[in-house]
Length: 155
Image (cartoon, rainbow, N blue to C red; front, side):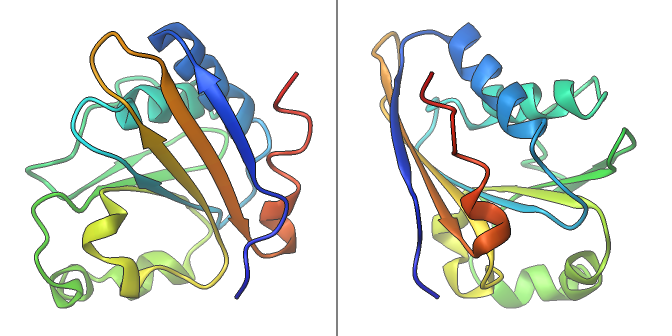
């Protein structure tokens, strides 16, 4: 599937990153899949906290050692971290297909490790930069439902 209507933004602070996440979270729908790409310290978990804010969820932590954490909110959220996943089969062994068939929002960090396991329709968020430097954030929607998410976020 080809990406449509992407958006590139420059984010200067962690507060701006969280606010962008909140604005994205307000636009999510049941079964939405957010695929994060970016290095250590890029801001993936910070943006996830903003998305969770919009879903009425607190207490977001990186699920690096547990692989997935479930949170209840306006829309339930399953937060995956594929940092330690070396093969997509490890995801499927966790019941990944069941997660994909549910209505929960799924956010997955470190998707570069499991690209072949990503659903065809999704919103990819690519973040580059780290430390005190500004971040380049690219929103890449795959599918019509996801194409609407970036609209108007550049304001």
